[in-house]
Image (tube, rainbow, N blue to C red; front, side, top):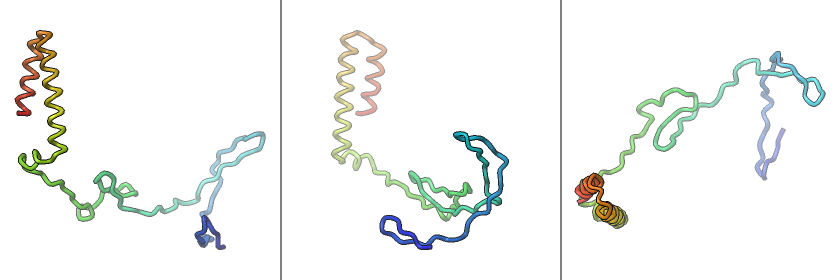
Length: 125
């Protein structure tokens, strides 16, 4: 039988799974209900997919090493990282926030916090 869904025509296969009673019974809105289950396991297609860079298969088996492409991000030397204007703007904002926190700690006289913030300042310098 040929059907159409949203303008796309497709053929319906007459292959139907054989079912048997599952033994589950009950009542739904006053009517007797009998449950059915597939007589044999229906084979599912196996696909190799990638989510956030991790390869996996839909059947749960591990992906072979040859099938998983290794994608590595380039590691830039520190000089090239500093040239990135967005990274430099971000670094400037962090240093400005650190300077403000250091001034507040000095105003409060909290020597432990001052020492921690000065160590953090040295890491950015």
